[in-house]
Length: 79
Picture 1 (tube, rainbow, N blue to C red):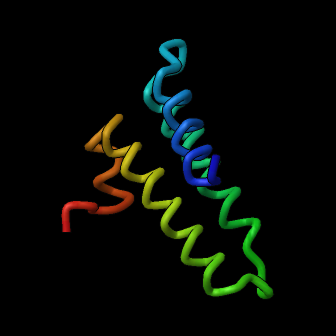
Picture 2 (picture 1 turned 180 degrees about the horizontal axis):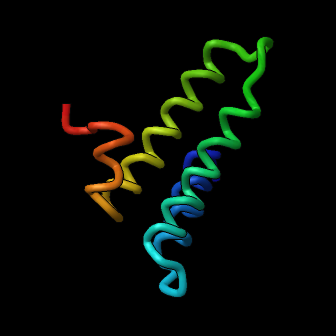
């Protein structure tokens, strides 16, 4: 299983947590995004940066699916 597939599975699990409010689910996803960017450093390769950006887009897409109004402020994926 690739890192991207693991991320998608993790996001699916978070999305299905009915005991969490939508706000809590979005916060959990944004935390994952922040952690990915924290792992990048000055020695990170261009490939690693591009992979992180692609994974970040997956996260924002899932956030948009959960709460379209919230994500409008973060990123406009329709362009």
